[in-house]
Each structure stands twice: as C-alpha cells, then as structure tokens.
Image (cartoon, rainbow, N blue to C red; front, side, top):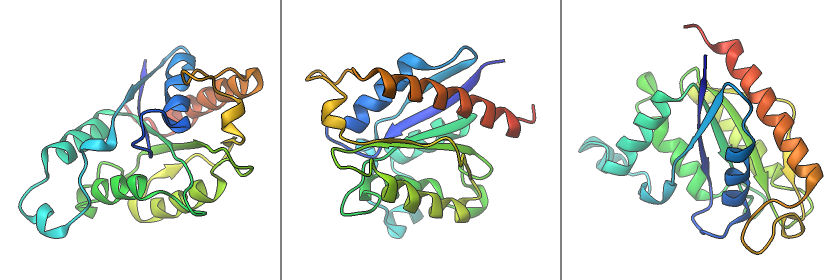
Length: 185
C-alpha cells in the first residue's frame, strides 16, 4: 500500500525557504509514501460570491488534489507572528462547503521554516486551530520548526543541514504512521 500525500507551501515566492523545505521533503519520503505538490498561486482570495457562482479552476483543482490524497503536508511560513494569508486562504477554500470539505477527516502534517528563531511555531499553532472546524487530524508530534533557515539552505534552495535533514526524514516517517492510523480502506 502506498500513502499519497498532497504538500503545499504557504508562500508564493519561488525562492522561499518553505518551498525549499517542501522540495526537500519530496526527496526524503519513506518507502510506502508519495508526495505530490500543489502551487497555491492559482487560488484567488476567498469570496462567497465567487464560490456561489462555482469554484474557480484553481480551487477546483486544489480540492480534487486534496480528495485524492490520503494526507496533507502543509509547509507554512510565519508572517507577523501568524499564519500567512496564502495558507489561511487555501484552508478557507478547502473548508467549503463544510458538509463536503475535502479536509474532513484528513490527516495533516504541518512544518515550516523561518529565518527567525521560532521556526514558524506561531503560524503552525494558528493553522492547527483551523482544523477544529474542518475536522482534520493534525499530527501533534514530532514538530519541524526550521529556525535560522538562511543557514540551512544553500543559494539554490537545497537543504544542506544534516540535522534538519534527519529530523525531516523522521517527521515524514511519523506522518506515514499517523496517516495509516486513519486509513480505513
């Protein structure tokens, strides 16, 4: 059995540390897991009027990708001590309509990177709160809080820090085990 994970970064900047962390995760997935990525750039700001007319193409593609996945890996920066609007907007679209949300019952992993000392801890914490509404199961431990990210990635965005690489490898193994706890078929 292969577990399918959909990963996306909450930063639109191509050179972001969180996009780099997501790419690193793709190269470290354990046997039995595949990690597909989704670019949130195609998702417009949530607007109930737009939703009433039907999901825009990018939102429909995002929801389909979420439905296909067994689990989700969210890689979030932290802006102004909180979750960035790009990431929250994606969760807002995915939570609609509440009775048919592709996040309902979905196992979720949350990781993040930041040049600061908290490694996106506040952003990750705020993101976890949204999953109470979506009935998603955020993995509580281990955590990946990549602090001083500018020292752990090279100029091309490759993860160069061996300790972070090993933590990420263990995290992905834990996400696989977490997802299997919820797998019913």
